[in-house]
Length: 88
Image (cartoon, rainbow, N blue to C red):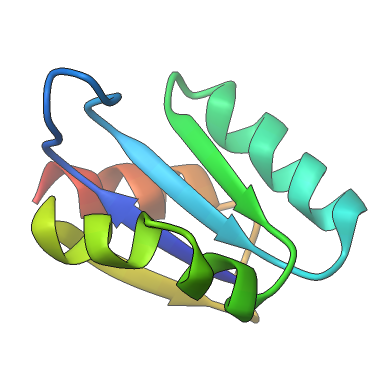
């Protein structure tokens, strides 16, 4: 799993976005629910290839991606970790 965190984005896009990349749909949904419950926006991808084929990789560079998180992670601290990265 990789999460790509954005801090500031253009007016047409959410201001705090997390891209979730995982091949397990149930993990995607769980992470999406957890992250969105904290008031953030998410994009989900089933593979690294899907992510790279989307405009999210170009968007990441253009729109100030601030962190990449990878497995394993402690889900108890995931919301805090995500928000701390976005607040930098």
